[in-house]
Image (cartoon, one colour):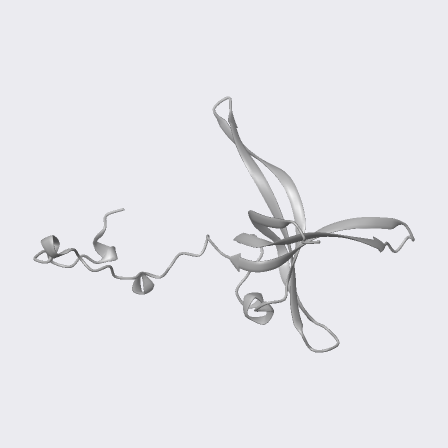
Length: 136
């Protein structure tokens, strides 16, 4: 049976934790909260909606050097449920996402890395415009 697919955008809560399995495989664990904004009586409010643990096996070491607390991320992956025994002996259930990709929409692209698009023939006589020339 296939696990349910999930796509979510949220903020990282706490610093991501890099661990290694007994076999030396890197795994990155982080917690994400999604929120919903609403506008009522001329005021925007943000309400926490869902907290999920995310486990990342692919590129774990690379991502551990990039991702930070409070950073906005877009995660795609599979949602799974597991049962475990807590320290007090009670049975608990946890949901977690096994990430297939994590991207960071908060991080802007440096101006020198913005791709240059070729101008159509009709505009070929126009001088080139740099992103630094754009007034907004």
